[in-house]
Image (cartoon, rainbow, N blue to C red; front, side):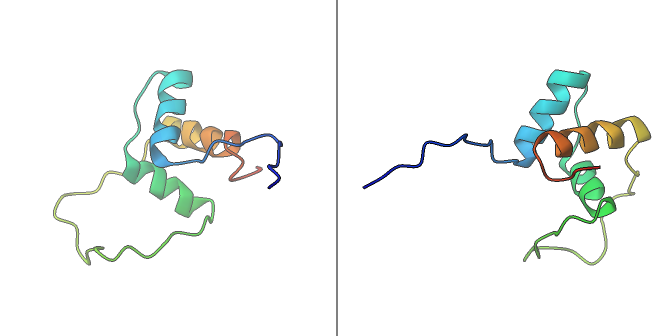
Length: 82
């Protein structure tokens, strides 16, 4: 059995993206903001089996500084190249 000894990339989960933004920018981002930015940049989103048609609470769009921080995190993890 042979094992490939290449560089191992971190798997970009929402938790890792949140940790990256917290570490680099000093603020927290909600997973809904991450999903919003992923949609903005055209990343594929999986179908959620428990998705709802109407939200229970008012929706506040992601602030511009958090959009840029999340985009930076997506670039860091190699999901976008902008």
